[in-house]
Image (cartoon, rainbow, N blue to C red; front, top):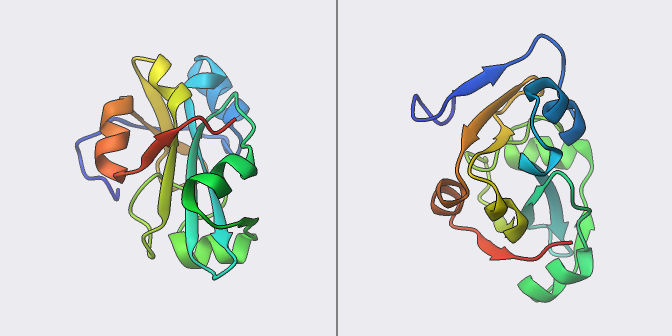
Amino acid sequence: MFFADNFKVIEFEKLTRTAQDAADALGCEIGQIAKSIVFKTEAGKPVLVVASGVNRIDETKINNAIGTKILKADAEYVREMSGYVIGGVAPWGHKVTPITIIDIDLSKYDRIYAAAGKNNAVFELTFDELVAKTEGKVLTVA
């Protein structure tokens, strides 16, 4: 996969399109799921918000953090910019490097799980590994 052998990838028979699906399949807390949501700026640049599965993203907080308004991205834009389908968007390895924001709430957990590029696979990592690999800005997103 895109992140080589450094991380433990867990594949499921069923699709894990939502944070709840992934948490149920793993038997972990929904807060441990690092959901990767792609937005776009008004100028068309991709913005990736990696949020705890328990949180709803407050777009105003993201707007303030990056200094421009974000818009919801459709499936075609997500695939074009990231190379991934919705439900399988990984936190790095995108076709076009996004502005990345990471939810501070993910730091509450020793281990977190992010989509591994497919909508039936996740990989396990730490919050510090997520921040280091994405070089994302950490803030409260909810």
